[in-house]
Length: 136
Image 1 (tube, rainbow, N blue to C red):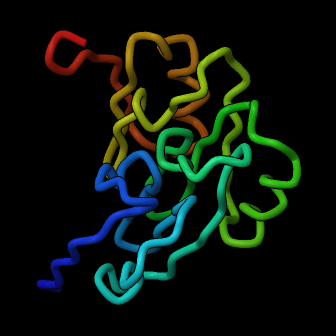
Image 2 (tube, helix red, strand yellow; image 1 turned 180 degrees about the horizontal axis):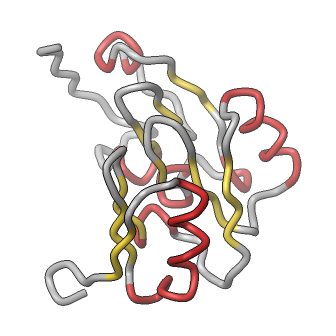
């Protein structure tokens, strides 16, 4: 796929705040024209917590996602329509998209999530490391 799409969501080009994409799907809070055609995967429009900023709350891979405990029940019902496997982390952190780096081969967690390492390893069935990136 060699598609390039120049777009914004609500006039903002920081798409990672608004959405999360894998090679199987895209979850986005706002609307961006041409996103499904450019990515070639189903796009699910689900604003989490009444905000278009779904990308900061979600992490995952092609098979599963992880969300913070603050995601409302009505959002969970929407997510369950599209995702069979959802882990809800019951800690104080909500910006999981900023704290978890993941693909289908492994997971890197922020040190802030070191207590959740075993739970995430077990849920995703992937090796999980706690590390910093660029001293953050």
